Length: 285
Image (cartoon, rainbow, N blue to C red; front, side, top):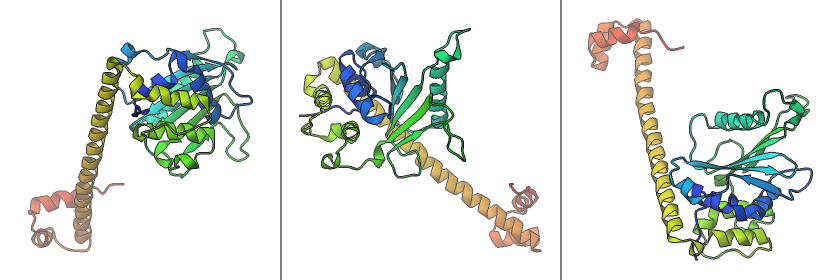
C-alpha cells in the first residue's frame, strides 16, 4: 500500500477540499480549532478540481471554508519559507475579513476569519508545534475582539509516533506529516481519518491523477533543492563579506594606533592605494 504525499498541493486539496470530503474537513477543523461549539456543517469554496491544479506553480495551496456559524477559515499548506511569509499570511487574513462587506454595509455584518497555516518548516523559536495568535492588550492580555485568529502547525516540531497520538488533532497532524512514508493505514476509530487514508491511497487514483501527483512532488523537490542551494550560497557569501569587513576594521584600527599607510601595506602585502581606500572609508554604523 502506498499513500500520497499530503504536503503537495494536489493531495492536500484532494483530501481536505473535495466536494466529498466535507466530513474530513469538519473532523480536522474540530480537532484543531477552539470554538464555542463543534462545527456541524461547512461550505467549501472552490472545491478541488484536477484541471485547475495542473497549471499551479506555487509551493502553497489554500482551502477556504465558511462554517455553520458563518466564520471563515483559510487553511494553507506551506512547503517552503520565503521573505514576507508572515506579512502575507496577515495580509490575506485581513483581506478576507474586509472583503466580506460591500460599500455601505454595516460593520456588524463582519464574521470572524481564522487562518490555519500548516508549515513544513520551523517558523518560531518556541518548541510547541501548534500556536495561536489573537489581538490582546499587551499588559493585561484583555482580548480586543475575537474576529481574527492566526493558527500555525509546524510539522518539523511534531515528532510523535502513531502510538503517542492520543488526541484526534495529533492523529490528523501525524497523517499530514507521515502518510507518504507509511505502508499501511494506522488503525483508528475516527471514520473521517479512515476515509482520509482511503482517499490518500494511490491505488484509488486514475492515471491522470497519478501523473499529476508525481509532477507536483518533482516540482516541490526541485524548489526545495533550489532553496537549499541559495541558502548555502548566501551563507558562503556572507562569510566572505564578514572576513572582508573584519579585515577592513583591522586596517582602520592599525592606522588609528599610529601605523602609517605604507607600513600597513607592507605588513598585509597590499597596495598603498588599497589601504588608502579602506582607511578613508567611513565605518558602518
